[in-house]
Image (cartoon, rainbow, N blue to C red; front, side, top):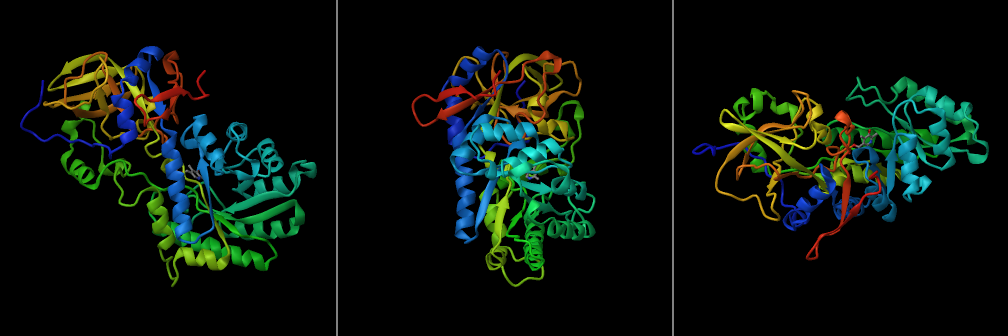
Length: 459
Ligand SMILES: *Cc1c(COP(=O)(O)O)cnc(C)c1O
């Protein structure tokens, strides 16, 4: 059922030699056989490279900075271990995440605790380990100052999280009036808290609003010093984007796709999609941010931070995980429909989180033949949507009829690329009593044969 004579929307990922070597090594069909179900493989060297690039951006701009890995973006142990080994921090938001980070070697003072309305037990744990706490509300500040018996562990190291003026409907952070009150309480609290600065986390990926708000926070640090507080850090949260594909492919995709290209004529608006191409991803976005001139200012953000003696903290999740993993499913069934195929794989869309946000994970999955290594190159065009092995009508890993170069067969593998950032495990659950897909860490991709082991989360 090859389609001929038409162009078909496609979204190839950027070159990724390490992932290609794993796919071409023949390892994946073996692992699929061993596990008898879907699994993820992780490429932690990419995490190291992304972290190093961000640190280089800071160094080149002459800005004192510190990177915390936002742990919610992936549950694997290996990324926390890499953060610990590299002396980076981890952004945690629950007692379990805090334990995990400590247990895998991250020092307490290298943790930042974020999230709303943190319970007293969690706050106590954070204070005991010297973690930085991003205070989200006045009652939380009061708990820290008076409500928790810390004994000798004080002071609590805190940042005050602000409600971004650009996003006034956010449920996170404090408005101006609350901030004024919070600062007064910090002054009165004396040695029970050490107020180190301010934080924000913006949705979206735009650079200018982040530069504007960061400069505002640097000003707040200067003002707070007048009140006697030793403020010298601001956290700009996460939101460094990943570029999954090249510019031409992305624009051609947006121009070329319509409802005919989706199973059940499912309709997506362009605005429903993550921006799968961005001109300045990851560390490049950080460089651009530091070079940006905040609204109404003559200096770059880097100059403003340097002059104010303010350390820039960042909490990237997705961007540290660019090209750090992929998800592998086995095709269990192939159905012919009108002009396309409907594949059923051995897993669910819970392992591809984008599908749960009225959206679609668009990067093309690779088709790996069941009988061993090989590329997915071929001559034809065989469109197919990808459904899950569940009884939910809407449980689709891909609504789009992906144009495969060969006819997919039962037993072939589908490898969804670049899924480490949020896709592979944010939403996972043992729905239908299906096993949660194990994670395989690939420790070496440069030799003849990749070396693999299980991430410690496998149960
Ligand atoms: C989710 C989150 C992050 C990480 O965001 P990314 O877009 O993955 O970089 C950082 N900080 C806070 C407070 C968050 O909630």
